[in-house]
Length: 117
Image 1 (cartoon, rainbow, N blue to C red):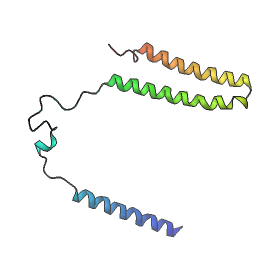
Image 2 (image 1 turned 135 degrees about the vertical axis):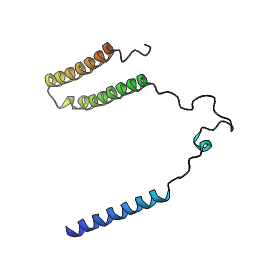
Image 3 (image 1 turned 90 degrees about the vertical axis):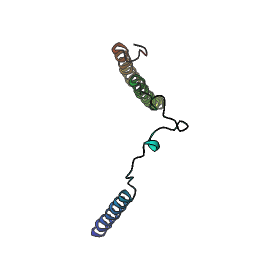
Image 4 (image 1 turned 180 degrees about the horizontal axis):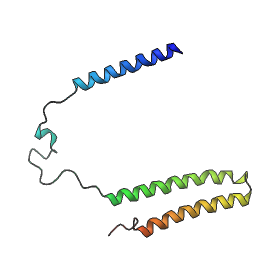
């Protein structure tokens, strides 16, 4: 046990030394305006190179991911249908779908699903 602790401590020290060495040797001291600006044939850019991020699109993507994960949780229920009692299976499946629909209607009523506002 003592040997494993010693080996772990040595590994952590080596990793820390390598990280510190790499951080000290890879620092850039000068920030060049031309190198940090977007490339447009050597001319100054006409507009901002970074597009504004749509928060609404991000919320739609998160809602999609949540419902996508919930749908993948339904697949094991289909496989377990032959091993379970049909009354219990139907109750669990109905409760699961009702919770999903309640979440969908809540998002709809809050206006998160309307793209233009």
